[in-house]
Length: 156
Image (tube, rainbow, N blue to C red; front, side):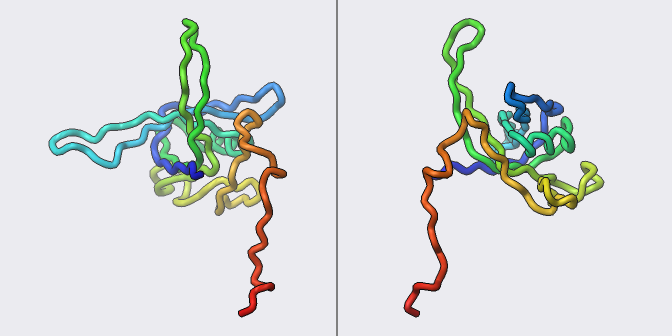
């Protein structure tokens, strides 16, 4: 199965850092993303997409991104159900961030082009995936097989 999303858009509000009762950092925010096409004679439409980031990625986004700033993210689509204040069942679609990157020139938004989140590298030269929250976890490391792709046993 494949669930991969790549988006680039502008934050519609400043992201706010919150913490779960267990102390895990999380932020939710919305980005405005222009559609890639427009009917002849009409303006391009914009979609407003809900985003969730966890742990270090959430901290990075809250520290370096503000309303109106361009952001590029990759992640996956996740859905959840909930009841609204009127007791109606609702379904929410969100993008869970794996990587977050700056977009544009330093003059445009205060950071150099192609910078991304990396907690161990102060120059932010590579992106580091965020870990999903336990509620979104698709399995444990024991659920996955290790594949040895070395060439040592090949006859040629």
